[in-house]
Image (tube, rainbow over the protein chains, first blue to last red):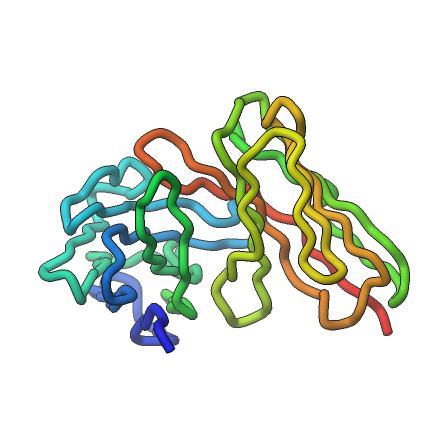
Length: 114
Length: 110
């Protein structure tokens, strides 16, 4: 049963701490997306990768957020330092580009910064 | 400017009723996707529509892509409590990145 796996599912941290969220995409998928979901803004695209190369991270606050794919089975999203306004659900999705891309989502990481 | 505008934002109806939700844009798309998201879960792809005027059915759900490929609708017949969730439309911006509308939050009352 192929699925995108995200860890941790929940994270509560204090303001100023570093947060790392991890994602294992579906084997064989060549595209990875990071989204942030809030009630006010909906699903916002933060960054995405094709064949492990970053294609677009314009949706990400550059001063505190970073996204990487150290290998084909792992994508990471880091926030340093974290702020209360970063509280949201962060989703990773993977897909396979074949003319059009369809996204398969993980269950998300619910981040609370206090 | 939101690329995809969804309406209504919220909808609460009785079990057994029919409903339609909409996804509109000023841009022309090569394809458009509909996802459903349940609480505590990630969105799940329901359907992709590709051709202008295309209609796809998934049990009691009917998806239509506008002739000009700038809008889409989702019609649910005889809504069930299990249809409750957030319905999102999405499309590919340049470089095949997927952008989502803000969704329609649907609640079916038993």
